[in-house]
Length: 494
Ligand code: SAM
Ligand code: SF4
View: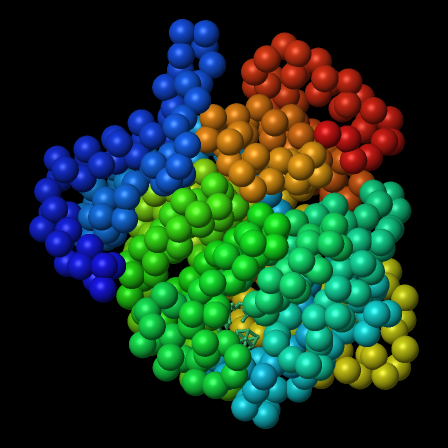
């Protein structure tokens, strides 16, 4: 009710260009923190005021601005871009999803994995297949994975725990193992979250609420454990209670009014920050794509979001939660992804497959699977249609051509800068000092070990140019020492 009220009362304000400009100025002032007399950023106050650049009412005003209003849209986009540059620089963190099971007991009307979709062949990865999948991903240069599963006793939480151990141990030459495993697995009890935490190998726990609108939620989740709105909504509270402090939230755009979903995510983020001292580490912005046997996946879903509105909502999110990473998947096509990178996205998937077992199928160097496994993999089905089919190397090349620095950096997580500790750094505007040199080191490693000739030639220029932008002399010297060691064949320096 509060969200509907916010959208209603701000309708007229959204037509007032002066007021909209003031709001954008406020968002920018908030993110471009004041610099004190010593030259260091003034430490921000704690609490939600600083996690959120805009209140729910302010964000509602921006969401109500007509996407066809070119002048105001340009102002919004420019503001979002400056905020992104200030906090994240030009780095884009790359990862790949790893689907381990397509069985599911739920009935989500937009997903082809839903239980009653009998046309869908199902599968889970055996331990052998899992190793081959990870090796295939490592051979593309991936260092960060997102482990994804449906909800089913055929792929139990125990299997997920075992899979995490396996993934963390797989090594291929020359670059070694996976350095960060995020998970997107069904919701857990506090005690299972504790077991997840105890594996010591999980980065971010991610779960999308899909739609924050209760009635729509009820309609699109007609059966199965996921139909319990409140239990799903409290997932991140259980995670925090169990000490899993790095969490990612999201909404599936196309189910209900996109403005409502953005405000729902903001309220969710505010609640987590106020209660646990850390907002979500990331927000995800999946938009519905066609999926076989999933009636609500057609034509962008029951409430399709146009490209113009999608760009607006990404820019509003960047202004509203400037310190929260934003993840974009290969659900979007390369052109849309390129535009959204300028508006606030900070992480994206690359070379993704959403059908179980398909990375190793395509990997020329993969060992031949036992016959039975091969048959299973070939029959398995993708969860939904992807729109960006570029290989990792092509994405790395295109990103650099567009002025971005691809990064596989995992230093914050491995140095324990997560949850509240990470937010403190983020709020001081300090991410850039840590992440820029570390990101460049991972790029250099990729160029040496995995890049095509064309990508390497461009990458060497990018590394050279970007090295010159490292601010402090001390940071620069430390970076140059590590770069030399990487050029001499060492790995994983940060
Ligand atoms: N099964 C778990 C769950 O539902 O939370 C996690 C994995 S599920 C495979 C990952 C996400 O894919 C879902 O949360 C949903 O937002 C998204 N998804 C499902 N169907 C989709 C579709 N047709 N288009 C785009 N995204 C979709
Ligand atoms: Fe199952 Fe997740 Fe698909 Fe729903 S979205 S049917 S829970 S895999």
